[in-house]
Image (cartoon, rainbow, N blue to C red; front, side, top):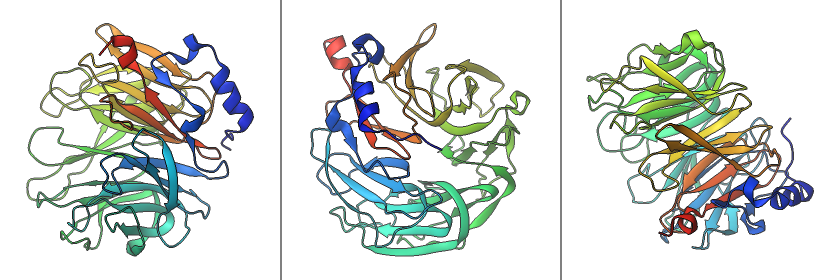
Length: 373
């Protein structure tokens, strides 16, 4: 059971010494949003109402029925108004935000537990009243959007736990062909999409809680995906979160796999899509539910933010000799996921944490005050 972020735990978070919180990340009472009773599984960011700032799309419920929500940014990094997303409550896990119908605004495709994918179409002002389902019932845990077939529109990859993962090809107007199943069934939770081998085709990287390694599916020139390569099988790690980013600065996308009561792993890309080298980062105590990256301190290297369960959230600052740890608050508020984006348009990446059974919250980056930029 996830712990609730109550008024008492909020007070504890805000009362920890400045050196524990780090002056680089600002947690303010106004940065909390959403009901404490919400079972939020994810909050994704995008300009939903067309006013130029990043809004939040919270998917709630998990295995239980709740209403998804849109949180509108006031332009200064605070979510000050909210509205329902979609006409119905359901068992939601994550939304992929992308222009699904080609009209220039961000729509949402929602992964739901034991329900089909729900498509919500934006009217351009952040209202998502037009809805329809696509595909069969799925034991879905997350979803991502990317152009899988090179035709210029956003397709979907649906992640299922214990069942074959699926992808849906878009005709460019928000109509999706019948889903195609990927080979293999794993305890997958998340997916990251990138061209790992430089061949111009999207590849898929899945987290896997089953301990058999990280399944990597290579995009084929003629379409579709090859059978997966399994990275890190010998590590026998339970991996819930994955991300893809160039951590070592060599111009190639590396794979990050979040540890569950274990150090996390970076699989370093050799430039041809091979991952023979891996290195550890993070704490043995981390229970990573989410990963994202940004150059938080503007030193030219990508840093890593993690959402932890049962222990403090952390940012790992990428240094030439390893990673420097910054804790986000000392009170162990359980986080279910996170998303990174510049909420207050100051040029510095901020963090949004999704908290299941508690209020979600944002952390504002204040490295500019430390650096003098």
